[in-house]
Length: 296
Image (cartoon, rainbow, N blue to C red; front, side, top):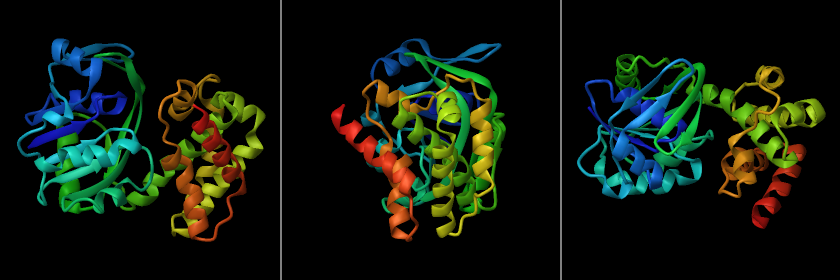
């Protein structure tokens, strides 16, 4: 298969380097200094106890050519549509595409744009760009969760097997994605709103965060997705992470970068209104973050 991995950050970089060890023809797409370093020196993966380097066919997305059987989008959610449009000339109805971006509606977005087979998924990993050309992965955590079309799911599973990467193919992929989303949404929203770490927010604003978690679960339930058991699990997770840990959206606010506010917070508010579910706590935080974002 010919595979494209769009976005070589912490998620895409690690997956692309791992896929590159298989028999498949893998092309990674990045930009800027990160791309230049990968082209010059390969992509270096630094784990806790080892590091390794892969010489990857890395390009600018505008330089994509040929045909891709599979495309993984590992970009920020706000870049998904543009990334699809830029690579769309290289795929057709026989291609399979999957977004691993944050959010629960990426599959819906892609299906409105494409005739390709769209899988849905998410990924669990602790990794980031340490510096251009270098991905730092922390701990052993890695699991890609995906599903949808059974034939495409089976083909992708085989690639993950070949790459020796852990994956899951749950029967209810929507619920699986929401199970990850509830924690990310609640703590991205609250850490950004209070401009504090996960540990600080958990210790000092636990009641508010629990309300946010409950509101997210209520919105999911209105869509016939039951994730109520994730409320306490999310709080327990927050209590166990290093005190100064934060979220990517909070860090993006701090660094005055573009933020995933609409996909992580606005989506819940919007669909609460759509399904008649009240979300007063997350609405208050969302409105505050909209103003903060405008001020950046």
